[in-house]
Every structure is written in C-alpha cells, then in structure tokens.
Amino acid sequence: MAKRSDLMTKGPERAPHRSLLRAEGFTDWEMERPIIGIANSFNEIIPGHMHLDKLVDAVKAGVYAAGGTPVVFNTIGVCDGIAMNHVGMKYSLPSRELIADSLEIMAMAHPFDGLVLMASCDKIIPGMLIAAARLNLPSIFLPGGPMLPGRVHGVDTGVDKVFEAVGRYKAGKLSSAELKQFECAACPGAGSCSGMFTANTMSNLSEALGMALPLGGSTPAVYAERLWIAKQTGLAAVQLVKSNLRPRDILTRDAFHNAIATDMALGGSTNSALHLPAIAYYAEVDVTLADFGKFTETTPHLTSLAPAGPHHVVDFYHAGGIPAVMAELRRGGLIKEKALTVFGKPVGKMLDAVKAGIKDKAVIRTLKDPVHRTGGLAVLNGNLAPQGAIVKQAAVSEEMLKHSGPARIFDSEEEAFKAIVGGRVRRGDVVVVRYEGPKGGPGMQEMLSPTAALAGMGLDKEVALITDGRFSGASRGSAIGHVSPEAAARGPIAALQEGDIVQIDIPGKRLSVQLSQREIKKRLAALPKFEPKIKSGYLARYAELVSSADKGAVFPR
Image (cartoon, rainbow, N blue to C red; front, side, top):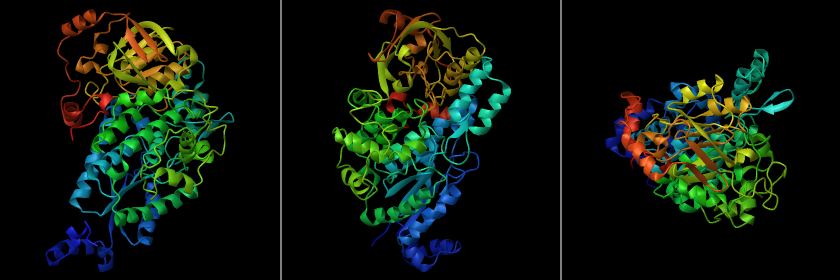
C-alpha cells in the first residue's frame, strides 16, 4: 500500500533520505513497513513523566509486533505543581500550544504514517490531542498513568493535601515537623498526581473521547497492566494506519458529548473547560464553555474523587474506571454509542467487549444513587461574567453554594496569596484575582496556592475566590474561574472596586455584582489602557494571539 512515509523512503531520488535513516540502523524491511512516530514527553522533572522512558519500550514492542517501525522523538513538559505560585505558572497553559506546534513540526518534517502520543500531565495531554486533531494523521494517545496515593496518619493523601498543609502551617495549626511529614509522604513515586486533578481528568477523558484504549486513563503508572496497555497501544497504532482511521473521524461532536458527560459524572478539573473546547476547535467542532452548562442539569455526579472526596484514581481504576462510568451513563441514554474509538469498535460495542460495569459502588455510584443529582461542574453567568465562568460545584461546601460578600481586589495571584497567608482576608470576603487571564497574566495562572491556603486556614467555607485565571484540578471550595471577558479585555471584572458586593449563586448559575450596567460601563470607560505585564519573549507573543478562556484560550487556526 502507498504510505505517507514513502515521501522519505521510496524511489531513487530518496537515496539521500534513506542514507540518513540507515545511519540510525534502519534496514530495507523496516523502511518498507508503516513508520510510527512516538511522541514521548519523558523528562526528569515531572513525576508523571519520569517513567515514560521505560514505557516507550513497550509501545515500540507493540509497533514491531504489528508490523510497523517505531521512531521516538520528544517534546517539552511543565510540572504544574513545581511551577505553582511563581512566574513559572505563567508558562504552563502556553506550553500547550508550544507542544502542539512541536508535534506538528516533527510530523510534517518527517512524514510518519501514524503517531503514538505519550504524556501524563496537565497541558501536555491536551497539547498532544490538539496536534492530533490538527494533523489528522492516524493517532492514538497513551496516558502514563496515575500515581498511587501516599499515606499520612493512616489516611490516603496526595499533593493537594501538602498545599493545604502549608495553609494550616501558616495558621499555626500544623508544626514544621508535621508539614515535613506531608511533604515526604504525599507523592510516593511515578505517575500523575493521585487525585482527579487536571492530569488525570484529561487522561481519563482521552478515553471518553475515543482516543485512548479502555482503562488507559486510570491504570496506575506502576502496575504491570500499564505495560500491557502500552504494547496494545503500539499494536493499535499500526492498525489505525492500515484502516486509515483518523482523529477527525473520532473527534466528532458525539465524542465531545461523551467527554463532557463523563466529565460531569467524574466532577473533573475545571481545566477541562479550556482543553476540550481547544481540542474541538482544531478538530473543527464548535464547543465552548456554554456547552458545559447544558450538561450540568442532565448528567449526575457519580464519584467522590479527590479533591472533592476521599477516593483516588487507583480506587477509581479498581471500581471499573471510565468504561464503568460510561456504561452507567449509557443506561440513562447519556452516551452517544456510535462514536468511533481507537479500540476499533464504536463506544457501545467497545463497552460490551470489555464487559464494562461498576465493580465498587462506593467509588462509582449508580444513576439511581448519585453523589449529586447534577454534574460536578457548573457554568455561571451574570453581569460579572457575561461570557461565562466555571466552578467545580462538586467540591464546594453546602454553605458556600450561595454567598454574598465584599470584594477584596488583587491584580495578581502572588498578591492574593500573600494577603491570605498574612491574615489580611476576613471571613465573608470574596477574593477577586484579576488580570490573570490568557492575555492579562499572560498565561492564565492556576490559583491552587490561594485556594489551598484558604482551605488549610479553615476559610474555604466562609471565603470565596473568583478570577479570570484558572484553578488546579486539586483546588476545592467556592473557587470560580475563567471569568470571561477577562480584565485585560475590559471585562466587567476590571470594573470591580474594593468593597463592592459580589453575589454568588451556584445553584442559580449566577455571578453578579451589586452595580448597574451603567455604573460598570462608566468605570470601565475611566480605566487607563491595559499595559501588558510581559512585553517580550514567548509570553508576549502568546498574549497577542490567544483567544478568551470561554473559547478554550486557543491560537487562530
């Protein structure tokens, strides 16, 4: 069969190209096979990626067994936890676009027949899926798998509890020795952080999208089954090339329907409301923040996974993982069964083939006995967020579902964090962190340090936080992000002044300030021209190109 890789392997005019391939040990028969590019984001700074150098060998074995030739290349990756609460966090979300660009460059410069995409963590996963949608070459995604939880005082724990421990320490509720105990125990080894944070949300949603094999998102990084899945992924990659099944055949509106419905059932990270629209945009499917709101009332929340509950992703895996959730949603007619998958069967037949079902009803609840009757995420609108904002309502305490309080204004995440740990935020306040949106940050910083500090200091049930930035999947409490338009685009959040009364009504899907539209417009008109915080380098270029958060913070196609 004619192959894309023939551009570098066939004909006498390609003798120089073959000569260069032979320098790497390629034989005639290897050049005649489908050549599968393996995008490996291995590095030695991200726990979720530090084992991918071993996992890639299993992928290569699968490619070889299926009659393909594997070729490995690398891309960058940022650890959000290590980048948190300093200038490094400005680079996290922008790295998504850079990763997608790097894969495009490699796949276009070297005409691979198909791709295996390997990643575990926050922006690397959507960056790779964006590249798959953009390139539309036969592609399959392989998550690296979640970390096992650590244990402190006999209780499973994760990195989210370390961030909260900092708040408890600052409040005098925890000794330095106890803080060190959390620090040393929370992250016991390889894998993406153990709760249903952004990394594991996106890993598991890659299954729901149909781009990863069953249980690829939840099988722990250190389990032998992770190697089995890696080999099967290599086999599947070659089959995708032979069948010419491409990402845009899979990433249809039905696929995004399934992913958002599954996300609601999981109570996943709010960052999914950035990443799914971004992937859809490059797949030429129209998905925005508003689409998430349509699922909130129809799709129940079925899991209590950290940070919203006591269970971790390893528990979710043993309970049946994504296939179990999708099978349960199917019972309620909430899944599009005909959507195609890299498994080689449509969703419905895939669920039947793997005998999907709930194995532990304490971890994955049924439609008849959900954790919450409504979805884990909610989209809010109002005069503070005309284009929407998002909150993980599953992680909000009952007493904070409705809240009204005076605005405490901060124009950076760092400023807000210092005020919180310095005891300058009072009970009942609404902390407003603005000019941290895609353009304003630039880069849309996560607010895990402020939200974790509030939780650790015991203020998460009395203080809300709203921002045009975003949150870690590990954040909990009344944390409302992605406020659109952002302050830098002269959204209403830029008009807020100290002491203005902000009203939050999560059940009513409202985010408002007690000001007239006339007063908001007057204040906005009086503001000086926005001055970018960073005026050179990648972030300056990023700010020039990036869209608003409600559209996924994407670059123009």
